[in-house]
Length: 286
Image (cartoon, rainbow, N blue to C red):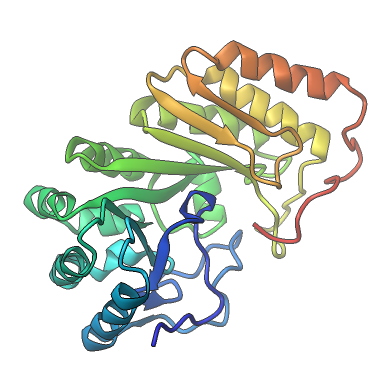
């Protein structure tokens, strides 16, 4: 039997993937901007249980080509747990092309270069990781528990080992007090990181992110994203800001689409439809 314990999250790009929960919850679970796993006790699932689900999934979906390993930081299972799991997936699904998962910089750093290469050879492909902000002040305020500089280093390590890193940043994470610092430092970190894939989402606070936090208005959020994109100097990066949280859906490639993206944002700002006094229309959660 294939078990799915709610809440269950996956990136939009994994809509067509077979989802296997390798763990429940998030081991860190302290970020003030994220309510995804609040109240969920972190638990790594037993190997025998996972292997049983893989066998059942292979019977039901033998043509599976893509698998997404949930939950919050599946790379944190470590090499010794992931290697046999990936080997079993390859045995069960002859047409398997790739396995993707969420990762953070600590879980990448815990793996040696040889272990990273070994996992990549076993078809582990895309690591979804959150930079969130390049400002260490902002990261500390929201209890991210990671260094922006270390995240840059670990993403570069992973991509050097052959992984595709899909990096997420959060528009508005610094609130009104640190908006410029957040945009400038995030652009600087991304310019050093040079990720293959980059996504920008607007933060939807589940509560007060830090003392004195004042959420950006919809108009300010578009302005912050405009500032961020204007500072990016990337090569061969696919960019998406088309999540429902964004007032102005965007998609393009760097460097060729940079000025088109800026023009679209400027047109949105001048269109007169953005809320200048509040957050505007948005989903209830990311």
